[in-house]
Image 1 (cartoon, rainbow over the protein chains, first blue to last red):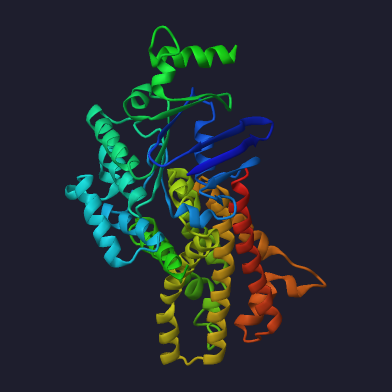
Image 2: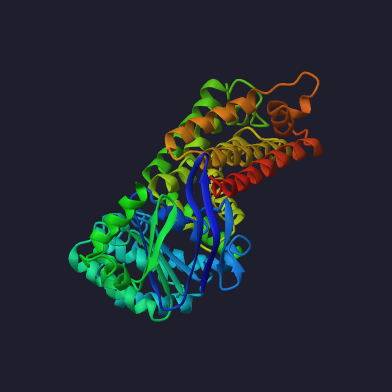
Length: 240
Length: 229
């Protein structure tokens, strides 16, 4: 379980996030939704320990992220926006590198690598350089790298950006499967993704949570019963 | 921790050999070393039993090349975005910093290894003062350790490899040009000359070791403070 208490982040005079409070439990797929500049990526970076908060604390179960960064990161898989990877490495080398950083031994690496390569259909590119791969393959390699250590929390920043419909479908299926045993947190502004897989939505605007509910509840709040209309109304109303 | 250190070291060290620019740097090093020793260093005109023609110009040559070797270590991670991957792995910052630092140092040591034919040839045909030559090599090793630490720090502070190179070159030149009238113990030039001429003292060793530790500690502080910004 992830608990966020009184989280704020300030960059100089700019308040990127203000008094964020929520918790996420196993089995949930949480979508962080909001317009550009709402604070989604900042929140993701705080959750992964890339940034430290100006105020507040993030707890993974009962452990503080600020005090146990390394131990907690052992349980997290993170895929940043655009899935940056080492272009000079082959897929095989990259997966081994990621596994080694999680202190996995050769037997564990071989087992998990075989499993992931089969699940994510990477057999054809396993010895190819990452720099030569298409965006779809790169994305799958990033997922493999982020999950090779069998994390129970997966955090993704704009995961379906630039993927074609087939790749988006495959990603959603993967996330649904993952969420049966863990927590998925993804930041997105693609409402199609949210409707397809999210079990919960946190809507951010100007660094504050303006909604925390399920897609179903949110959709039925407005007479149009359309998530994009709700999104537009809520973010624009709060802005005014 | 050691296994993670080895992993970071191996990744950085082998990445040098997948990159043509690293081979280019080695080629330039060999050419500059040969030119400075035999052409500018009057190798055959002066007594070279202590290989002074080789060691005398090494800081100048290394000040040009070590920034090029170290510049991609961090700045390339920032430029390509892989820094987010790296910093979200369960690895202590000091392990990342030391792993990358040792990889750059190891690559420089390989470059230095290429000067051995000069030493062997001189030993066979002219004869060398082995003790002084060992001191010379020790001086270059310490120089590499200091310069690589400085350039790693500059790479960490810049997301552009070219800026990292220029900043690395600049800080090395500033360090080399420091001269204190009453505090010669703080002069790089003075300490380097002492070592390569066989006058190894504890104060010189402390001078180099303290610079290296201070810079590596600064790198950890920089990486930690970036989380706040």
